[in-house]
Length: 280
Image (tube, rainbow, N blue to C red; front, side, top):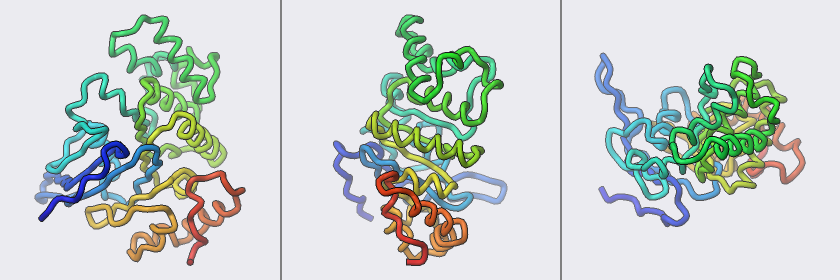
């Protein structure tokens, strides 16, 4: 089998070719990804969606370098994640689903942690950089010395986002960024992410089950099913693809409500407003 043509590396931030993920279990081998192909271009907000067990978060962890595929190639900015140096690893920021803040650290210490680990900058400069990122995510300096236990769910997400951005990475990975937030906090967090994407020129890869977040932020959607990426494209193209999961996920009751809410918003608010009305 011939390998797919590699995309333009100048435009491509993530390039995944021929990826297999196989786990061993008591019942034998479990194949999660089979010859999966995906490339992500600079400046995109690409959302990964799929049913339970399709390996969405596993794929994020492989892009980050926390897990290695069984075989195949994952390249981030031209390098395999496992080969990234400390400075190269700064090219990727990760927002974990529940924030993953260190409970014994203050807000500012959590944000500053990746910079401190490098041991290259003086403490005062690190503190200043952390305060800048704290304000960038919409939190004032009065929160700097609080502990994670004193924060609301929305504030935890913002602090974790500030930590993910402390190294000024061009690539940001988001695992369920609005999970656990009420609708108002979720909308506010989406507004923040949209603004940061635009202002910082970020490339974003996001896993989400929340259809409102999906339609609100995505410039492109990749659907995982049948152990591979079955379709990628704008919402309009993805929804039109004939597959049982897509029909159930996007055109069921939840999907219709999310699409209706999307079309009620003023034009120009969302990069995903290419979505059609449900049923078209």
